[in-house]
Image 1: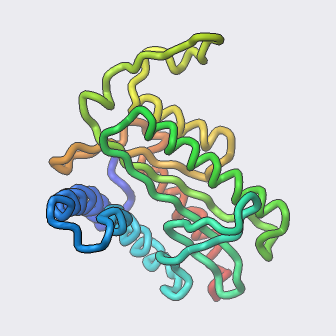
Image 2: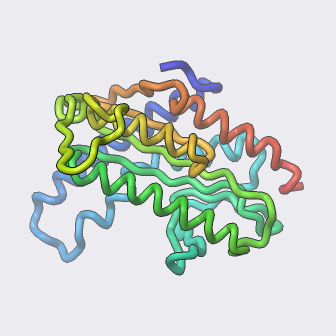
Length: 238
């Protein structure tokens, strides 16, 4: 994996991946304990907190005021639904929506969950852009929309998946692909079709090793795009 611009960010990325697996492990242990009246899935969102911390750090280093960075209760208006809760927002003092980021992960259960993840990402982007087109936000310039997903690297996710074609043929690029291959194709197509400004795909094993197998959707490319956009918007905070 190519190194991202700052040594500090490189370290924070490794810590974010480690935090993800450690949090999953602790949640798995808690599930085995007697029910205490709270679903263990309530804490599931904490698995990706390391990535949010990294995004906050990058933003602050660029000069973004901390009170313009939002990491909780980030409901934005939609078009097909009243609101959607996003993982990370930056909103200028003049109430302009500058950046919106969605973080996702998948460990195991690759079949149905792959379809769920693709539908979520597409639906969320389409809803946001439609709301923007229909003047749901008080601005003419579109925000920077980012999508990052961490997927477990395992035998199941790296083996070719059988394709069923009972009526029509699938596109050639999907033939002989694993779930990791399909996620790479998906993340690249999200940018090609301008659904997201930048996407990042990270594959990782439970021993904290990770890689970005495609430079176009690497974390380095993602964070460089994020930084470049914000550098052009710093006047919004003066």
